[in-house]
Length: 132
Image (tube, rainbow, N blue to C red; front, side, top):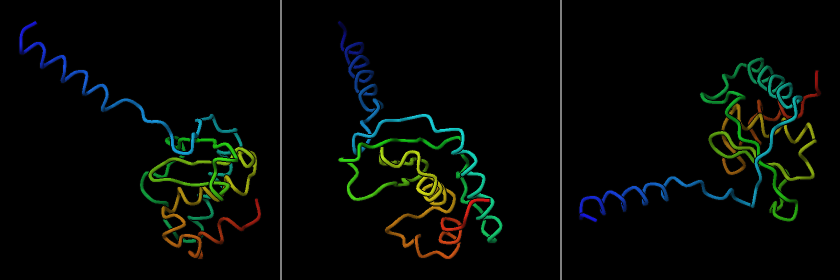
């Protein structure tokens, strides 16, 4: 094999390895959301807008990647939103509407636990409000 062809093969192999999918944190497994998740998203978005805030750019529903985490692997949390569009849910809370809406509100507003998003009055109002 010529030197040029050998270098091209090595470059191709390296590029394949560099773009190979990485395992999800916490051993998470991707899942398809329940249809009512979309209703919760619409509810949370309407609340954010009614409170006078604009949902962050890129906070549409369709690109959200839903991931389920085994309860024993969720380190002290029941849900986690990760930039820009991943929502991790403890397997015991996948069907819990308040947890789902809480993470969707993070998705709409941005910010997370370390950003004191939980203290934002709009975040509080939209996660604690009763369902319509």
